[in-house]
Length: 143
Figure 1 (spheres, rainbow, N blue to C red):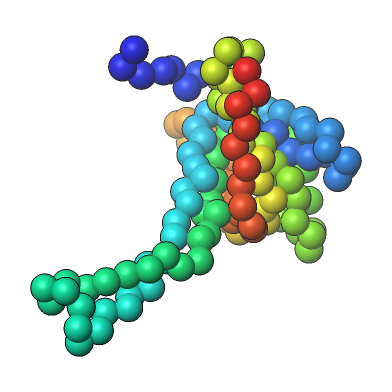
Figure 2 (tube, one colour; figure 1 turned 60 degrees about the vertical axis):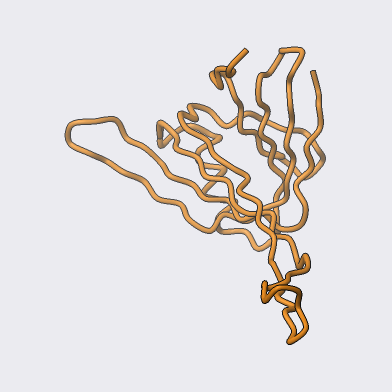
């Protein structure tokens, strides 16, 4: 198979810090986590063939971004406002292919760094959310 349709992917938030995850409603686009790793240069005068040399440095869990079909009264959308205002990290999950044998869950702790709403005259209301991951995201085959 050349690819898999991402339709049905879920974004969930730990609603009360106890590991009870609730799906955030009306997510239309989701991307991430966009993990990165530093490359530390260790080139020296005796590096072979005048090529730069590197070793592995610190890793960054990256970011997750979501576009939501915004509904101002939706409780899961209001919860994101509260998450933005709080000082503590919160746990979130992305579940790809829910209910499928290939289901994959990514769990991460994050803070919201960007939360913006849009009210266009000729289109739907939307909300853009960026989650900055703190620490290592975990990927678990859950299907």
